[in-house]
Amino acid sequence: MLLLAVPLALFVLITWQVLADGPLLGLDARLSDALVHPDRASELLSDLGNVQVAVPVLAVALAVTAWRLRATGMDRWWLPPAAGAAAMALVPVLVAPLKAWTDRPGTPAVPPATGYFPSGHTATAMVAYGTATLLLLPLLGSPAVRRGLLALCALLVLGASYGLVRRGYHWPLDVVGSWCLSMILLLAFSTVVARYGQGAREHEE
Image (cartoon, rainbow, N blue to C red; front, side, top):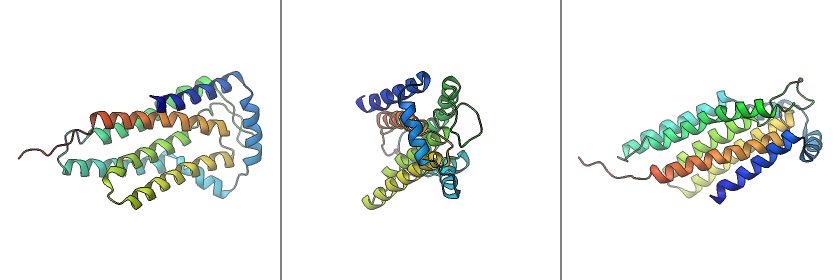
């Protein structure tokens, strides 16, 4: 529960600051001014959070996991991929109303608009790549390959996050808020799989 309480408390704090135009927003604006430098590299990095890029990666991981678990004769082999798909489906369900509620303006680098908090692209990247990684890790036998997968996941999420801020698509707090929200979803996914998806046994012939 402590692991869940930390990102939840941080998300509530950041959301409160956005709604109340609190002092963190001044620091957020100064950090954004220092980081924003739209260029081709930042545009490409931000694309890692596009649904068209991240969700197909997760879809492959869902299919591979379902196939491998079913082949082992695991009871409830469908639960981990189903939970992963549900975690991804919850991203727009949670992010869209939060954007409407907070009604946060964008940075000076984007046309005047509102609804930038939390960052949907960041949440899409973190939940898609994070869930794919959590699904595939138990299927990998080599510790080196596991470490490589974790490193790749971190690079993809951090790359998308940095690209969104560098390009000026989002304030840094938009991204950090999405990290917290996504961590809640990933922890919920892990809890469901650990509690209900590990009852593996070989089916009797």
